[in-house]
Length: 594
Image 1 (cartoon, rainbow, N blue to C red):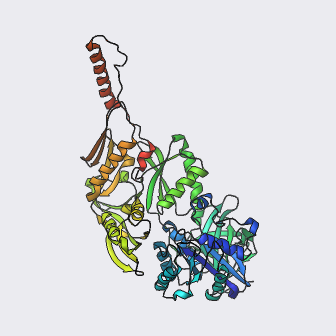
Image 2 (image 1 turned 30 degrees about the vertical axis):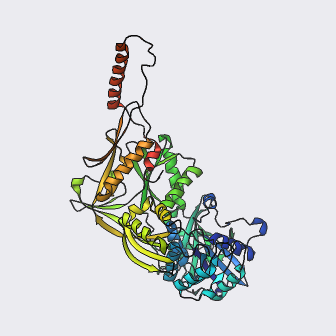
Image 3 (image 1 turned 180 degrees about the vertical axis):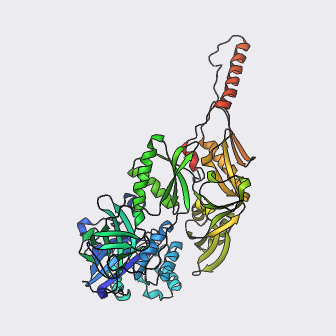
């Protein structure tokens, strides 16, 4: 049985691309957890997509030995879409290493993660990374961190994860500063599920942090919140591959292979206890993670519908935040409406469906979920404009708002405040981290932040601005449904919900973009944006020219006129019965700027 006093559980938190995974690599090398010959960059990023994009999507635990101490590290994602995973990892640890890039300084996600760590009561060890870069400003950034955490600037460790500079000093600091776990091995077992994965050969594998008691191989388990019973088929720890051991002791981090068949039965944040001696009290902090961005996924070919359904079933086994339900569109046929944590989550799921399952997909414009109250006091959750009831039946519509934070050099303040105003945002607070860095807190409708707000922010701040947000509440607004008509027929998958004051601009923007995307036909096509029966914007795609008189060589002019009249009648008939083929790019028209 391991002594809790020699265990240290910690995680690495940072903004995206500040060097978390590289630091984890160096630690694995230094502690001898990995042989030099097995070493590769971003070792803990196991998915091909993670390595390609250079970001961590899935958290990854690993156990190391250093100075007769057991160090359990959890490498967490840095992107705002996966902040729920970060909060669960923090709940499994006693300490957090805050990594800040010496060239970029404090960013919005750094702040958000610091708040999460402070809330969880963790010991924070701040470190400056990438001091080997020519653009690094360690003194300036150290002062920023010192004013944020209230520590001394000269106490902050300066290291280069790439070169391995001072990483050994950091490992010593972890042993000195991070407190040992304080669980009770004699109490009934309580273990926090901080992640779970589905293995098609072994079933659901729970990633556990044992708070009290222990989990042994062969134990009967109970998930307190879900009320599910399970069997511990195998237990062990990560090194970083799974290594089997007889038990996960009090204070340790490890895995438990169960006989559960779906990840939906083992929600992240649940508490595991033993069937024979159950604990009643759960480990605090459990909440069901809820998606708030929705998009329609349709196969290019109707024959792939069942393949898409199977693929989604397999993906949800591994991603408990992903939700899907069947959807039907007049133009695109049968598909599914999927719920995501954010746009990056959407992009990753789309890539995984196309790569891992070989599907060709049409994805509609993302939307948020609205709360609609009808005239007979019924509350509806609407995830797509096509599901909105008739205007005469609606009393009010509420839309989700966010609380956002932008960190930007003070030179760009004016343009950032203008940008916030342009998305109907309300500036709440303006403070300074240091003489050059400003922190702007604001509230804004989620729908307006979804599409190109982040790109605009990077553009107006020359790439220096960083942004983080959290869901705030739902507010009643003057919202309308904007329908897009192609050739006089409404296309349900292009409909959207927008604020009345923005409807005209959005309608114009969409019809202008569609004009460039939809190919010309032999007849004229009208593109219209309408609210109810009122058309607010219109563009026409001219008919394709075809010279029907080219085959004539001389003769009377009446022959030419006869052919032109025949063409005119044909075009008139086509306009009535002709069908417009809408290409798949048209459905993502608002997401792409070019």
